[in-house]
Image (cartoon, one colour):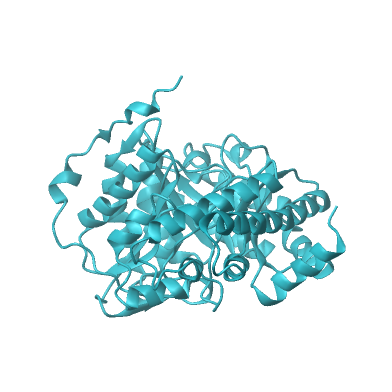
Length: 454
């Protein structure tokens, strides 16, 4: 049971430290919408989503009002459309038509994002997956609420370098199609290694084929709460600092489980997982960078940054699994640039480079996230950055991702503006040395030796 002192403490976290439930995400299986008739697929998808998610937004708003807990987003994830549309879609235009139906359904039920316009060419690529990937620029530039993800590798099977090369081209085309809005389509597109089936956060959420018909997953975020906890022990050694972060993460996770269970009960849909990912926003005091600097770093990116992030990420996970038996998704610390004012400040100060961010991704929950780069960077360089990040995930047996935005018409020293939770980002320098011949080899990078566990 939660006692009075904990209620008071939680209220203070909400009112003063930016604690919120970042998202209630309803995962919906669309496997029963499959057909070889594109019209039937579109009709079934629309009906399925609008029926299952009819009460999602209202339920979230009711819980928010009754419990005085901010619930920022209500979202939907669906079975990867590369699977759902495989029998019916015979062209990229067919898949883009499905994206339009998904967007229409998302608007109808009132969610801000729908994830799952996805493909899973982890080991090999089907014809349908190739068509979906080719349709991504068209789909993201013509919809408002659709998010796309592509899984390119895993520890078990290696990295599909043909798909990596293709994604470099797709990202550049997506950027070109939305160059009037600082290449904004790329903010809704992410690639993964070791992609989880139950991630509630966008842009990478999809409803895995191992999941049940529908499930409620909740993402809780509390960088401001963790920062306050770190500030409360300014002279502590690392043992005390770690314990402080772990206890705070425990409390935050319990709040998330309360909301998830309540939403599950009210909607009659099973509870899946709580994802305790410290996801920052552009708001002052809601920054991962501020936490790291609160530990004693002059700027994020200074020597010691990766060690500080390791401590933070590990204690967040330890506190989370103490609070709930069903912690999942990504659960740790996100380090996006555009969504974190402290990260932006570190880049502008010259303390943080894309190479240092890559080192930090060996530790953090995801990877290179919301990184704006010059618009004239070659496709092969983008594929090389993706390949590096996939390799980090593959070898370290962790989820890694890349959400990178080549901002057409802008260069280092300029700023890209995305608005809302996506914020703004300084254009970061990228190595000008070519990886074109490396990417052109194609094929698959084999799985590491420690993948053979059977």
